[in-house]
Image 1 (tube, chains in turn cyan, yellow):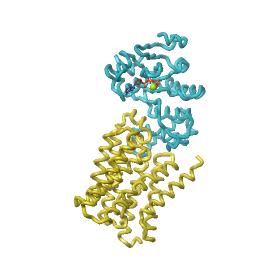
Image 2 (cartoon, rainbow over the protein chains, first blue to last red; image 1 turned 90 degrees about the vertical axis):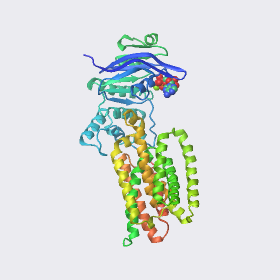
Image 3 (cartoon, chains in turn blue, red; image 1 turned 180 degrees about the vertical axis):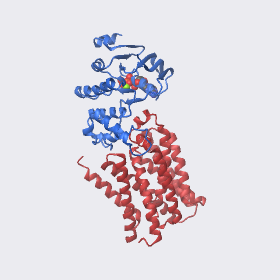
Image 4 (cartoon, each protein chain N blue to C red; image 1 turned 180 degrees about the horizontal axis):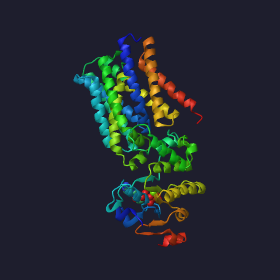
Length: 226
Length: 262
Ligand SMILES: Nc1ncnc2c1ncn2[C@@H]1O[C@H](COP(=O)(O)OP(=O)(O)OP(=O)(O)O)[C@@H](O)[C@H]1O
Ligand SMILES: [Mg+2]
């Protein structure tokens, strides 16, 4: 039985001189792996921001199943080279349930487990500012996942990664999707990535959109025609 | 040395100020707000002068000015790009106002130098108690805000997605910062706030890799500066502020040299 996690209805967003999403409606079910694709500037990041309740849509609604916890890996993050925190401390920032300055035993276990699962144990004490691009993305992923969200939103997380790191990162996401019932929404320009990992796609275009099963798409041209 | 009450007072007040500055400084550095804390200190000077002009305690005027302005700054939440020049403009205005208040209140020049450069050796029991009270209030707020403030200071994007009320956190932080700046001004003076608030934390940022580690380092660096500075001031009769500034600079540049390789 499928369980709807997010329900987007008749969404529209007007900016001065620009209208995004013409009555966009779609659902995301638990365990879905939805890829959002579309050209630069069609509003993918804006859609994500609306999902995260950071911008108010002009019209339409976004409903989450009650109690849905969301993790997010943003498109841009300004971690400079002199940023002081280690990967471990950075990931731990997202543990916000406890009130004490120090972590409880349970929280430390949670932290150890996520570092283990994202393969960051060996470099957990490296400063994140000094980590490679691939390691950084893994750390962002670990931070988003450390408090067990139901839904993970990735905004072009692989844009700066080489093919090996790209698959490495998405194999991890897939692992959580399949083993921990994590629902995933991933914004990407990468057709190959979409086809390999997601089950559904949402193609955004300037004045319309298309929603479908990835299995029905054989090559990139099919997608451009929809 | 400790048989003198004024030295006891100076050591007690200095210790508390070092602790609160070490902690607040780490957040100031994390939030890239060194510049802003500098401005708060100039506003503090102006407030102190205003207090004297009104016939109050300098500290009351200082608290009034710094707290009101920190709330205003927080509300404005100007974009980072415009912030620096806005801050420079506002702080020169306040520096000027401070000088005006002092001149129309007919106090002698030593008042101004006390406010600007600190007068730790001169503080009495009452002032020590004030410092204790302010430090404890600040510490309670920080304890209460610890995790959200840490998240927002070191990963603003992550914190805002988490649903942390980052505006509320940042205004509250600025108010506590205003308290700390006013408190620290008692000992190093408003012009040298920078020394205790930002130098130890900046050194900590170079050396430590966790927020708690940075706090421990910054508190230690501030404590060494204050304790040793007071001692050297006592022995040589030179200004304590000079020694504190010197020690903190040594610690800061020392950290830079030691950590240069990585
Ligand atoms: N707050 C805003 N005010 C005005 N216009 C905005 C605002 N936010 C986004 N836009 C506009 O909306 C359009 C969509 O932007 P968005 O960042 O969502 O695109 P995107 O699909 O994520 O692009 P990219 O692939 O480059 O990341 C852009 O033209 C942008 O200028
Ligand atoms: Mg985008």
